Image 1 (cartoon, rainbow, N blue to C red):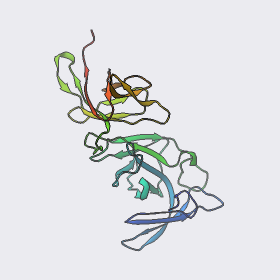
Image 2: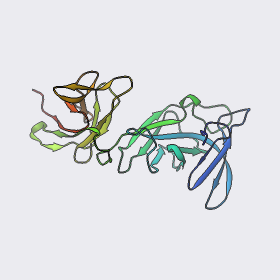
Image 3: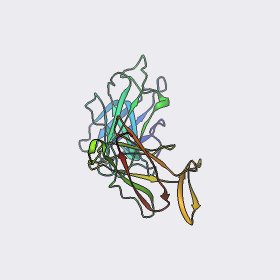
Image 4: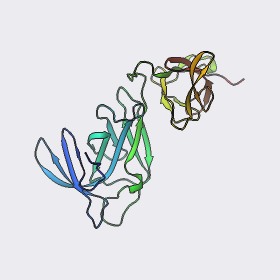
Length: 253
């Protein structure tokens, strides 16, 4: 199947068929013929925004459709193959716009602000072609079905400040030096996966008779924040296994 950005390309989906060509005089936005299969009705539509959703672990589209939205717009996009979501005939709000995806049971929710530019004609405004499609990576949640022998860090973020001892929900957890992030659940749990990277930032080495995963040739450093305070912890990560850890907010000395 050709890419939807190619003139004459198409995206087929079980509920919708979207076909179109880019007018040679003005290729943006493109005019699409939209046919809803259960009714057989067709109409012309302008492509205002394309969002592509990617599973951060596999690099492929999620196995089922997710809820994709734009703040300030009460419109459900047309979902197609390869994780693409098309917003048709949408009058975009003022720039920047915030695109969000509800992750469902396998992914953390995510959102991103996107800048867009307008054209004098036609309307509605269109995304700058250099920024199309908007690509959002979905980070696996704690319930994601990782294959056996995946290198994982599973942990909990806790708060012991002021004599408390509680889990911290919705804390952001990241790995220093690499684009790997997660959010904690209602009971403070998170999961992070590690895969060797082509550029060598994440690598696997033999150390002390064991295979371990390094980030920048060092043991990974996890950084958790609750929005106002940050805590760090360096963790020895055994390759092909699950390492467990706890990050704890404590009172300053």
